[in-house]
Length: 83
Image 1 (spheres, rainbow, N blue to C red):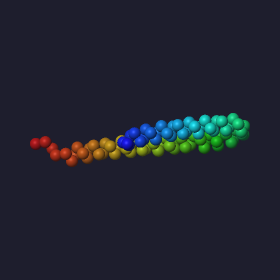
Image 2: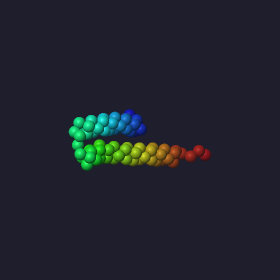
Image 3: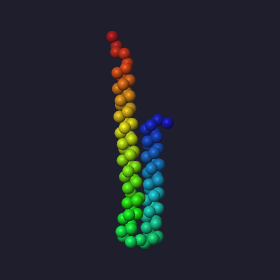
Image 4: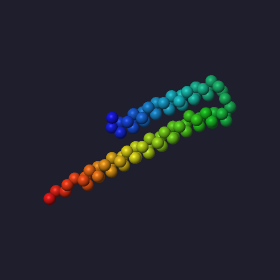
């Protein structure tokens, strides 16, 4: 499987799992009727991983694009020039 396909698959799986986590957090907060300060902590535990995963996926995408460009340039440079 090519790298961009793996990244898109990873992005889709991360998005689905984070939606489920946020949905679960909302349900748990409704059922528990916890204090306002506790809700902030619960939201932080649910949202911070989303932000971290987005940063990691964007960095991975940028690195893969730079690698692809580097490989293309090296391939062009190694080709014999026409007379």
